[in-house]
Amino acid sequence: MNLKIYLFRHGQTYFNEEKRFTGWKDSKLDKDGIKSSKIIAKKLKNKKINAAFQSRLSRSKNTLKEVLKYHPECKKIIIDDRIIERSYGKLQGKYHKTIIKKCGRKQFDIWHRSYNISPPGGESIKMVEKRVLSFIRDLIKYMKKNKVNVAISAHGNSMRPFRRYFEKLSIKQMMKLEMPYDDVFEYTIRI
Image (cartoon, rainbow, N blue to C red):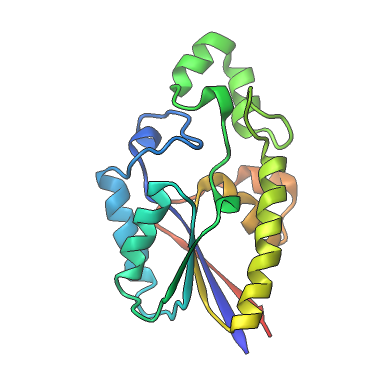
């Protein structure tokens, strides 16, 4: 028996559009974000989804809400913050250009895209990967026990380790990934 994971990123938010570090700040979906949520929903329209996972942030919840309009069979929605966006600590809410101007492009790039260096007061991707791997272990057990297909409304940086795990990527390959707002990544769990 094959079970399916449907992983997608929340739609674009106002902070994403404005090139601001969002992290754990609760920025709402903008017009394009709502549109891309509807695109994801249409891509998943004919799939079977029995359970769904989201973070506590509205962008994850509202994207999932669009998807589940087509899935009355989905009886369980679970909030799990192991899939929440990376915390950018003291950079959260700040504009990228402000940080570049203040700290330089090189430092910005290190904080923004380094695997094991955290921004001030925030998380490194390595730290995010640790919590996402814990989520994946529990997810696979849950899916096998309940024999369910799942949808996961995740965030750009929590998707990196997810994709690394299922696509067998190196750290370098993972860190080069760009996460689209309107695509779905499908993975199979065999039981």
